[in-house]
Length: 123
Image (cartoon, rainbow, N blue to C red):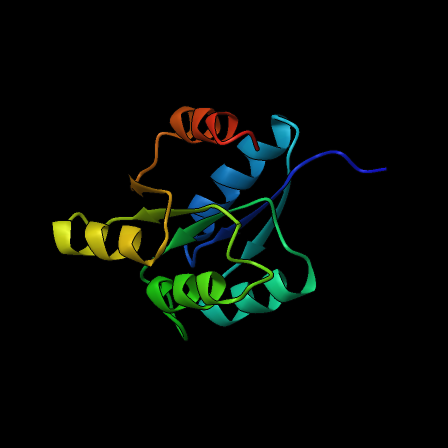
């Protein structure tokens, strides 16, 4: 039986996804990647992750739209979503938290902090 926790990283930046995937896998997580919002929703529907790191500015479907869909779905609304974004405006932070994000991290993210956040969330 698989006990490793699954994380979905949603970001159109291959640099960000490579860094996060490598680091989290080294720390025992199973990581999947989605390069845009549509792929993120597809992946979440196929296999619900234990946590999601979600960029806001992406092609096809914004992070806000993805977050809204995840939180409106009874099967996925419990999944912690951590926003990762270069957007630092308070309106964006407040909107993300109002939509259900558990945390808002600025890019470039502090990967150690992100790992500690997962531990704090018991993921």
